[in-house]
Length: 126
Image 1: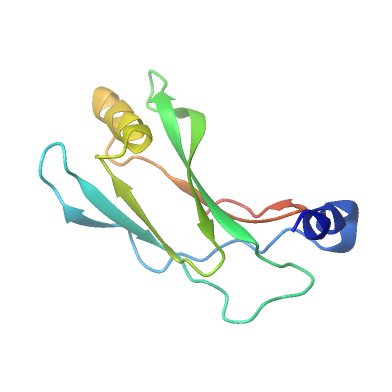
Image 2 (image 1 turned 180 degrees about the horizontal axis):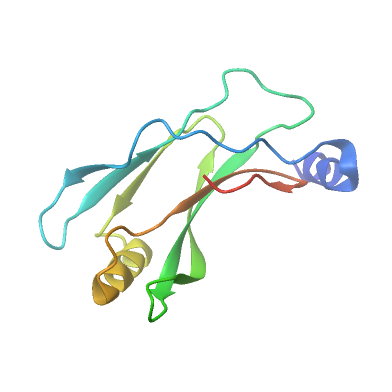
């Protein structure tokens, strides 16, 4: 694994292509203290040797500025390369912090970013 990452980082491959959303995020539970949302993206069906995907990373903002702009992005989850879904839940302390930050400034939607990653770097954000 370490050899693969160092070979990729040295320039043997390019960063993965930008992900494609598989629909809009879906609220699956809206009870206070137990909110849950599903975020889905399309997992590439074939592996591109020039732009391999090793994992997915999901980030969310820890706080928002006065105008509602997201700030201090934190890693919420690292997912395997075959996983095309992230469940954003209020019960998880790190995810709760992001969700509540959006509540405090009353943003209409909390932005999450999803990246496809390999040893060379990460794709553009979904």
